[in-house]
Amino acid sequence: MKTPGDTGFAFPDWAYKPESSPGSRQIQLWCFILELLRKEEYHEVIAWQGDYGEFVIKDPEEVARLWGARKCKPQMNYDKLSRALRYYYNKRILHKTKGKRFTYKFNFNKLVLVNYPFIDMGSGRGVPQSAPPVPTGGSHFRFPPCTPSDVLSPSEDLRSPGVFSSVARRLGRGSVSDCSDGTSTNSELEEGVGGEDRGGAGPERAFRGLLHPRLSHDSLFRTYGGPGGLGRPPPGHRVHGDPMSPFPVSPLPGPGGLLGPTLSPGLSMTPGSHLPYTPSPSLSPMLGSHFSFNPDDMKRYLQAHHQSVYNYHLSPRAFFHYPNIVVPQPHRPSAAPDKPMTAHHHAPPMPHSHSLHHHQGEEQHPSPFKFKLQPPPLGRKQKDGSTSSTGGSSSSLGSSYAASGLLSNSSSSVGPKIKVEPVSDVESDEEVEVTDISEEDELLDDDEGDVFTPPHPTNGTAAITNGNLGAIVEDDLDEDVFKTPAAPPMAPLTPSLLGLKSEPGQGPPISPGGTLCIPLKLRFKRRWSEDQKMEADGERDEAEDKKVRAEKQVEPARESENGEGPRRSLSLSLRAPPPPAQRRASSELQRATAQLSLESHGAC
DNA sequence: GACGGAATCT
DNA sequence: AGATTCCGTC
Image (cartoon, rainbow, N blue to C red; front, side, top):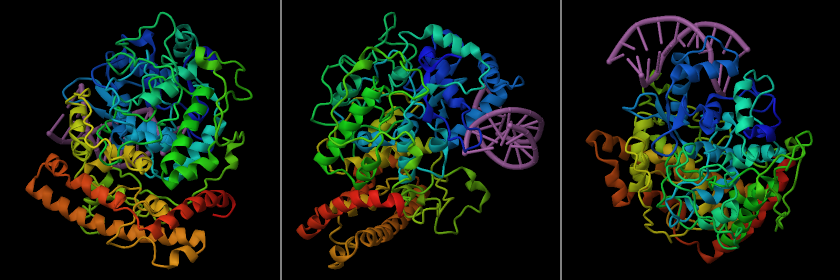
């Protein structure tokens, strides 16, 4: 086996499930697919095609064979493999490109966010839309390795703090390891990889190309992409139109600046809900095509993000994050000391405004937050039920579910199974998803494939401090939430904490008068509940709306045009500016939040 | 070919 | 949980 560096293909350690989970350390199919996709050797077998993240399996049986080899399942065949692939539909990791044989498409959003929650904060929708729609730049598209469990698990959403924390922990490990599970039998791949490893840098390349066109934020790129885009393809690599890249287009011009103080990925220029940029599957907070796991990059990223948080009053979530943010370790102790990283690899350590802690024993960090803000993504099992028309959780909630932490309120997924599906299915999701954010999404949609539609900076400036929120929530949304214009999932928490959004009219998030006097934790909780309530109401309404709509068969787009959907979410999340008092409270809250996060380590 | 349920394995 | 197998349906 090659060391991670050798293979060039390296998924960070944490890309794998935790040891505890079954199947841990086993590569997951989607990772494997990505792996193949990024290797030229397999271009005849599987390759990127069309839209972002869209790939075609040119030789199904071969792919199956490879997969079988990797998993030691000689009996593997395309039929089985495709079944596995179909399971991803539900998880929204993949979806089928209709009408095209053996063609599937990754939902980058989901994957990325989940994997890199830290990024999400601002990145998501927060990224300026103005950014060039140019997709990527990397020569090879690399999917961020993720923890499948996180990504996939319907129960755990991006929004879930738990995820974040877990991710953070994982990051802490930070090490990059090769993708191969220890057992990997298939040296084929690895070998191939090694050979192909240009320049070797495994990890760094990993994310090249990941960026969503709309996401492309200059600063991001600069920051993470490094000058000229760090992950520049090693010599010999084709930069433009790299077949390996999911993005047809060429790499971004890489301005060399590092993260400018300006905007960080975290900072969102636009409100989450309205971001012009679409949450298409391809979008990834990963930023940059050049973003890599290179420690330096990561640091930079984090730093930038961190700054943005402070500068922009990011959502409390961000804070949660930060205290525990762990910077990925450059190299795992055991890891190859020098992974061949790309040139930028040696970038000097960034000054961290905040100390990013390195935790090797990442596990030490219990997630700061025990709250689960998000409801679990739904699965597709809805069907069984009697359609749930009964439960309040009517399917229509789907949209809303995301919006509020409601469901999840009690950490355990309360509504574990809220099925949004009726309305949304993968496909419908997509459609809807479009609505929410903007037309763009539609364009993005797989089938449509107009990924490149220019971003509509609708309100680009509507910048909302929440950007983060939006980002966080949103990405996930893209498929889930977007189905319906739902209130921003994060809204409950974030707004309240920050006090950014207190709704003037409605349930005042902050209990009148009481807030300040209440202990932080209580306050926090209280607020949370209130928000949830509010959200719940909102959801209910929405659900009803949806039903109606569904019956009428109203076009989702219309809604978006009207601004209903998005607006709605905005209203929830952004609500009017908080009264002064609240504001004060909010700042306090912010501080508190930070504290809380710390406290929570032990206490919560 | 694609989908997805169900049982089963790991 | 994430496949793997098998299978019926479209």
